[in-house]
Image (cartoon, rainbow over all chains, first blue to last red; front, side, top):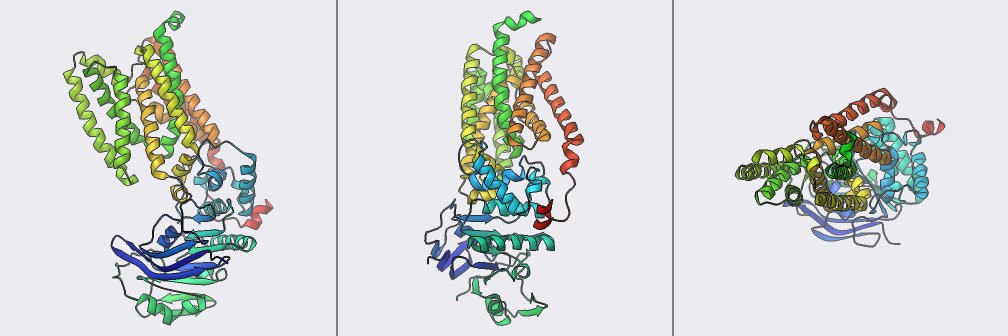
Length: 268
Length: 286
């Protein structure tokens, strides 16, 4: 079977800095992968490569057996959360409908089929009671439900999520992870989560990819989120504590938003 | 007073007014969505240069406006790659343009009349040719807007996802700037350079307060622009006061009323932000 995502000796340089290199990764169809790493480690850039928005500096990449191309309808994308402006003239249902046909030329005349699929998606994410509300006036959690509906309404085979849980409260985080997991199981689809905290995802993912300082490690959470592996990837001693089923990483920033000093390219 | 409506110049003014209001009403919604008020003003001021140059060379000023707004739109599109740079790009082009305009006007005899017409509008002086050109320019602008309408809305509201979905963001930005240049050239004839926002921002801003339904917002924006323009013409013809004063007064009144309406009706319905999220199960039970 063709893997959903396949990278071979992939490297990425941005502005003269090596973001990551020698990255080889196979994500089989139906897998759920979490991508962790400090800010600037190239997590979002990896998603941009898969979306065909960012070419590799070296190596090869295939998405469902093909080179990535912009506007691939088989990929759903949830960008890093940015609140919709409060005064923007857009209803919740408009935002979802964009995911279906927003890229097509011409006027957006109402079509019954579009409406049916949008309504179906709104119901799936529990957004039907604010379907006609201005999207900018909704809470962060509500907007994130719309993002999921928007990404899934085109029935993609791969879902890429860039920190979908950022700045959400705990119940909203759980609700979002549950929604994506329910959809993934039903559809048999591949999901890649870029996240800053592994804990809300622990029950939902199959494997973890850690990117840091140009290096990387991939495998099941129990094998990757260990002192040995993380110390090697970060190039400095890292402690990992497991408390009541939660993973706490000390001595390394696993995600978050503090800018790291630009690390020199490391030979692997 | 009713006799006045039989005069060709009043009828021509009405036609240009209707065309301009429809174009401005439609384009204005995207101007507000993309926060491009400054670009509108910049284009209009550059249009002032074009008009002044045209007058200097003995050409119709409206032709000069059209030529320079389109040229400026292309220049801004080429310079303003990133959104943050755009203000600086617009400002730089605008400053140079206005300076040149002042020069051309001072070199022209009948300096004051022409300057007044360009700055404050001269709809009661439009010719038959102006009507035909307005109709053509308006048709091109509306047609182009219809073609890019859906992806432009997507790109305006949600640029990150639109880019990932293959929407050509930069092409759309440049295309919209050109459409905006056409709309500005139309509106300058009616309300002049200095009052350009009264047709390109205010009706859309008012419509936005009345509804979030995209189709209805478009209709309201056009209707308010039409009402302000035609009402302004009627008031001006009967009082002899400037058209642009009445257009701006009427559109501002519409804006105030729309805000009042939003405050009384739509406001409380969606205003309280829900602090917590409703889980899907509970949401479905409602």
